[in-house]
Image (spheres, each protein chain N blue to C red):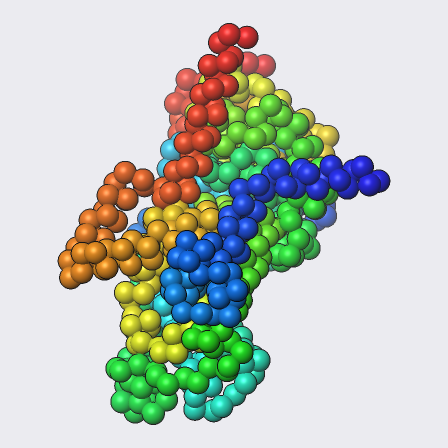
Amino acid sequence: MVHRPRSTVYLEGIMDNEIIFETKNLTKQFGALVAVDDVSIKVRKNSLHAIIGPNGAGKTTFFNLLSGNIEPTSGSVIFKGRDITHQPVHRTIHYGIGRSFQITNIFPNLTVFENIRLAAQALGRDNFKFWQAASQFKQYEARTLEVIEKVGLKDRAQTLARTLPHGDQRKLELGIILAPDPEVLLLDEPTAGMAAEQVPELIALIQDIQKAGDKTVMLVEHNMNVVMSVSDAITVMHMGKVLAEGTPSEIAANKEVQTAYLGGLYELNV
Amino acid sequence: MTQTSISTRTAFFAKHRASLGVLLLLILMPFIVGLFNGASPATVFVNGNGQSKFIQGLAIEIFILALYALSFDLIFGITGMLSFGHSMFFSVGAYLTGIAIKSFGLSLPATLGWLVIAAIIQALLFGMVLPRVKGITFALVTLGIASVFHIVVMSSELGPYTGSDVGLQGVIVPDFISPANERLRFYFIALTVLILVYLLYQRFVNSPTGRVCIAIRENEGRAQMLGYNTFYFKLAALTISSLTAALAGFLHTLYQPIVSPNTAGLGFTVTALLILLIGGVGTLNGALVGAVVFRLLDYGLRRYIGESASFISGAVYVLFVLFIPYGIVGTWRLKSFQIKQGWERLLGLFR
């Protein structure tokens, strides 16, 4: 790649304290395959930052590196000025980073309520009070009900998670990461496998959460209309590398992106 | 005020009617069995020989087995760790009790004190491998640790203490709890211990800690992503389980006064596994029901069939796994849930 166009508008004059997430030369190798290759990005606080790219571009691996599920071969991850590269995965949420998965990752044999209650309890100080019943900790139950209502699963609270329809499972997963009220949400294809008519509802919910709660959302998404309409910034990945980054209009106008990913077929409706 | 306390009390009785009924039956059982065989309650009360005393003995064995199976259910059924070294948890308790009383002449409270220390140490020993191995590897590593213990117990160097392959014999049990002369007292002590442990376990499973243990069984990766350091929860489950199994071993030694090296072998771990498969894995009640069925089946077959008993019992276990895959309690819960749902759907049609 001869030149790598970088956004001028999006990160112009950004102060250090406005950057919530930063990666420096992040690289992950699986044997001979370089899944994530020298990725350095900056994510602005309270923005909705989308990561797009063709299949196998390394988006999910990149998310796994951010959330600490895997360790990078080299490079570092900086969250609010703090190096969290080598922290174990269970610390991630304590820093304020919530992570959802492309393949639904819930507790299938527990009820919706219990799924979210466990998430609400996690950051409290009552995890080892084994002589008290869990139902005595009303603060977690209250938080659970609040979250269940927000993601629209109120009628399903006592249903076993595995018997939920797929769309509701995606909502449950969103609920699980909302419960501890993290600052950053890493959403890996939140609409994957959802029926087309359910997608706008979920996207509106995500936007609402981001705007109302002053949260930063990082999103991997394949639905181009969604990405173009909701994002503040987009990073395009291709073969593990950053191909381009910038605002939606910059990305849509980028010839290189169009050939690599959009296949020259996508036209921006502005 | 009194009104509410009365109504909550009625609600309590209504909710736990079945359990309280079983408890009452267990308390009265020695006397009822005595009456059937023409022994007056007074005879039973002073531990006269007879059918009642024999049944009490069988019941004590069942209580100890149930205690042991409960402890296995906590780590296997609730937390989802398949340990093949669980018999070690039991036999450490059993051997330590025997050695402390026989070789060192310790009193029972002192023995119990040492038991707690030993149980915590062995839980930590198992815990040491926890962060490194999962699933089937954990099963194999625990099997390895327990096998080493089995070999150590059988070794002739430790013969003076453990009795090597003959087993630990000749433990002098204090008179007030002697299973020969004070069996009714022993019966009630064992029953009380079992009930207390069972209630503690019920509470643990419903506590914040126990709920996380269940989450670990369901999806450990997700539990970590929620922010739980799963190692500590597994270690907590292991420690409580180890303490319970050691307590079961303690009662075993006092009741039998003999400790066979078989209690340290793989076979005894499989016993716990079988009890749970019969009763229902991860249900707690299943451990109790399973222990009753297992011991009675074993006893009945041995008595009436003799040599080929293990062949028949093996066949019975296979039938259990084939036709009652969730165990007695597990299948019962599933069916009653399905029947309830079916009824609601049926009634919904006419509404």
